[in-house]
Length: 558
Image 1 (cartoon, rainbow, N blue to C red):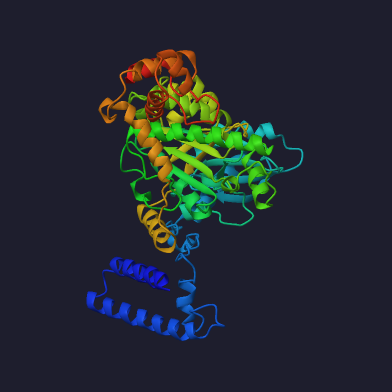
Image 2: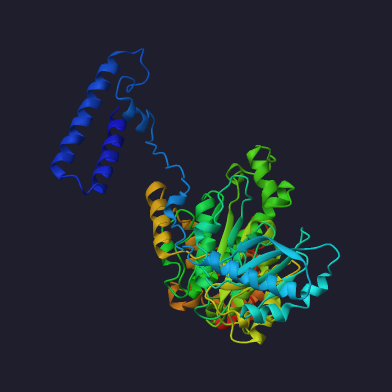
């Protein structure tokens, strides 16, 4: 019984230390009163041998917190999705839009009548950037007649550009689109969709020029490349992606790794429960995080192969149905979360001296990561061939271009001209393998106040971020190789042993023993140092260890 009292006392004292707002004297008195009441209850119940639970007659609220067991259990807060009330409504107010629309439609009608074309406008769509007029022409009228009037209508409307689409897909109407005199910014609340039947990992990123939502489904397009000049809207776009995840997905379904070499872009998000790690600002830690992510891909692939599953969805369904094969250990019978790794400026990592490590990790992740719930979103403000090379373009078929300096940069990103003509902040061109045409749109704008409101809600209503200490340890060990002084008493044979296992691709203690004619203990210490340096992987039973470093990289770092 004293054992129970000691546990409760220590727990109460721990809570008292954390509660600084309560006076010390009153805290001690409340502890003494609660303990004395517990002692009284236990003494009364100990005399009644038929009662197995000494707290059965005590306050039910206390019993729900402390159970009669060897450990005191504390339940976690259930995850609560941030409500839409935390987001701001659009501040745009219609002023002279209607009169402007009537004026422009009358001009178009006048030109059509001058060329003896009978037609009526059936619908007007006021988008954030453009106005779309749907024109229904009389039977027997040629569509070519309307198309030939493009330049005349554009001149009469005094607009910079005009498009005629004949017909609008799915209708028999002709679409005439021209810039809106009263453009507006798309707010995040305008595009966010929280319907339960809306596909998971599908997020609206903005609107096209006539107000239709533009979405990306990361189930189909697992990786995304973003590029554009400074101030073109890349940061707002990344905030839109992250906020869409926070507003829709629970930490059990989606985890985040945020890499920000600029230090301030992702600093707001530290502490949210979706983070696997604190926001990474160092290029060496970024290389370590990407290396761990590649290792996670390998581990997940091996687990799926043992279960006979093809992708993460079928594996999670198997876990929910509790139908995993007996060869899978109990700790592996848990659902795999999707992991999004978002890199703010990929060019900084490329030019940081860690290019080879980072490129290898990204190449390996992109090859099979789409089936295993691993997603990469990389952004760069330097659209040059040394950053966006052919391999990156193949691995990232889904790309978004914001405003760039020249048509050459535009073709490098989206394989077409057009991004150099984007002038408004937040405008982008989206190239997707699932769309035959390029999609031009405007990213949704997320204010700092909205980000702070959502982050504060998550920190208050849910558990704080439970960072994975194992991942942090592996990343710190992978960083040790960049500083030889971090290794206490390195073995004189360490460098020679590293070259040996890399050249022969044999990472085993026995191989070191036979080659250097040393004892088992020394060979084991050398292998442990090689593992800490990232040269070899962890133990794999009787199999040789995985070789994780090239000879060129090893010589460069040592």
